[in-house]
Length: 312
Image (tube, rainbow, N blue to C red; front, side, top):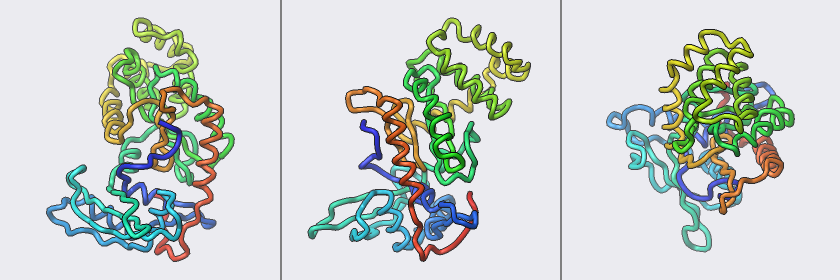
């Protein structure tokens, strides 16, 4: 898949909301009230709820931004109904008209940002950064190792406090030592956020030397060299964080993650593979990601946005 945004498929209401959280000079953030109300309503059991009311004017502003549709696009909300794809949630359908007929249809429902934020996860950068880059990775994945400096050094150096990079586990079934590495990574995160990133750097920089048969020994050797402590060692040995990794895998599958690394820029998937399966070189990824992040930072919220609130 080419580097960029998915042109088709469902989008999430909370994804729309993520783009309303744009920093202001006062340090506050603008929230789309109509969608906030919708998502709050969605969270309750449908049996006790009526369809949420949507402020079409504000909804359309954000839809045009997310879909890259022209500012003068003729849009309308055609349905607000219980979602068949995600039982328990509402779905909103937006149509775009042109040349006398419907030329675009998008379905939005609550999901992506909620899932990306379900777990407390390792991160680099401030929690209130206007841009969040969430990445699903596999410690045995060579392409993930190639992206290490891009995600942990180049982008933070380029954008400083304007970006937050968040790590999520997605060990692939075909990789034999990826699951124990992910379990150990969560154990490292339980020690501290900084300790996780030391572990992250060690795994990827020594990836060629590690295999299914020697992972435990390599891990023990590294843990001793950095004085990791008994708590980390016991956690990794007992697989105490296995459930956390499994939850991350479930979220990845629900978000349609099919390979690693998979990036989400403010809630939008950014596939990192060409159609022939060849990885985009890290330098080209850096150029493309810079452009996309700069676009996110330039977005100006509507002057008539309804309310102000702090970051969620």
